[in-house]
Image (tube, rainbow over all chains, first blue to last red; front, top):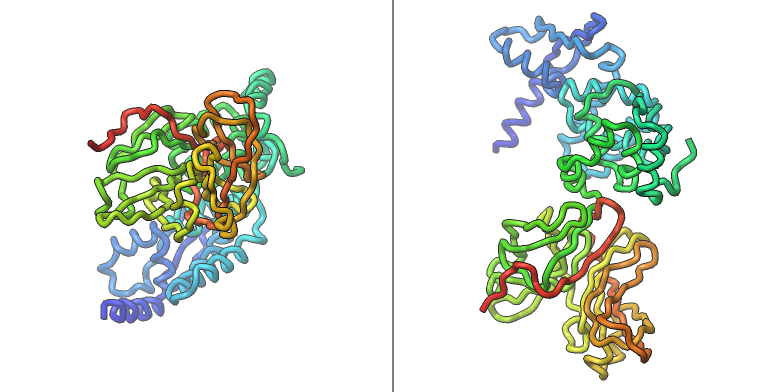
Length: 175
Length: 251
């Protein structure tokens, strides 16, 4: 009985639209249940819950660009639909795989920052998995480039570190 | 991909295998510090990545498991949840250990024995289906090992020909058995886990003898499939250390 009441409230809220305002000033209309997945928007809506008309609320998200938001919103929407059904984890994983497969490295970074800021932890988790997967077999040089890391070891220090665990440098992928 | 905050970096690195982390210590001084920091190791362990643990002693009592982590020295593990709540004397025998998994022999109140694979980090356990050779007297040594080829663990029993000469050859059908030719041991002291690639069992001997005798190694087809907690630096080891260090024996 608890589940039926929560699902009915869910469906009624999903019809309401909220406006999200991106860092570059674009306004995007989303369903309320999608907006509630974003922590800053959720907090904003709770603070402004006295407002009778949800349509009038504009939630500013100053750390996320419209380009990133417009990728995030369909993902979160579909993911919500999937997790509302009693589907297998495999399906969700397949959906996540499909979403992340074609992302460029830069896009991956932007999405991680956005997911972190918006508190969409399931997406952040998936993106971290993908990133870890992309770099785990790569060389030190490749990962420095990938993550924008400045090497502050002297050549002697680095050579010494490498000598400590030579097995860790075996079987590394070509850059 | 520039300018990721540290918490995201930590998330990403906690999902990587131990080998990659060892390599990425060379990225920069900051990463070296990050990767070797204990809390990342802990997070990493919690992500079911590799970690190395050696259990000490062959008998554990509730709340008194001692374990030796090669990287962090001897630690105690508190608040064990034994797979069987009302097990005899609140204790269990460790038949083998590998990468944070324990193979326990537990007797319940009616003195029925059961074999259990127990992950003390996640507190999950799985019962090993009855496998006759393990309950027979000639199995003088047990070992739990990780086999990379199947990315899972295997349990072993080893018979010492000097302990029990009359091994029952028909029992071998249940698993794969291999005959290892080893110098004559005084008694087999310990099994040191498995070679990661070739599923070998290493045996320790107290002294180097002169005669050569075959030792039977029983390898079960059983796979525990509890999400493995593996070692942090790619070395896998499990052994008993005698005399017992600190754990209490009843009586």
